[in-house]
Image (tube, rainbow, N blue to C red; front, side, top):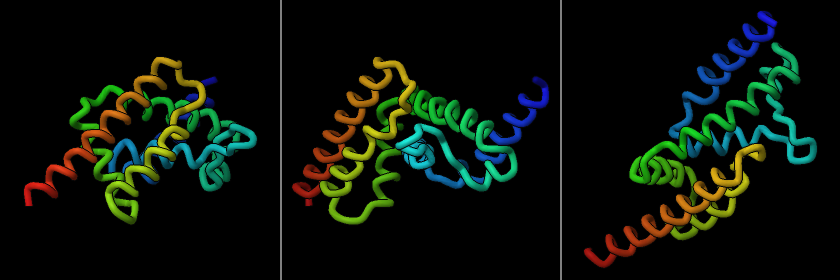
Length: 145
């Protein structure tokens, strides 16, 4: 049991230090963790970490980490979420409306499957509000110039 805890702690450290910290914000981390989940099996796969720690331990830690990042995002104020989402959208190409559309379509899949329904509803509600703020702010900025 103690060995499992040590292993989980080391996986979490490696994941955070080497893969999550370099990312710019919660939305990028959420998207990254989602991308590690195999849609067919539902398991999280990270080849480099699995080679060191084993696939089962990595799946367990990534499952918990995905949920934790998701919940921390929901704990942020809408202003902070908006700033974070803006930074994430900078990684997309195209107009703001195109970026928002692609991000909005993808973001629904970023929700960890084991999240309670009220968290899922809050995330979707916040995302809808942020989209309105971003697009309205863009329209206002264009009309001011």
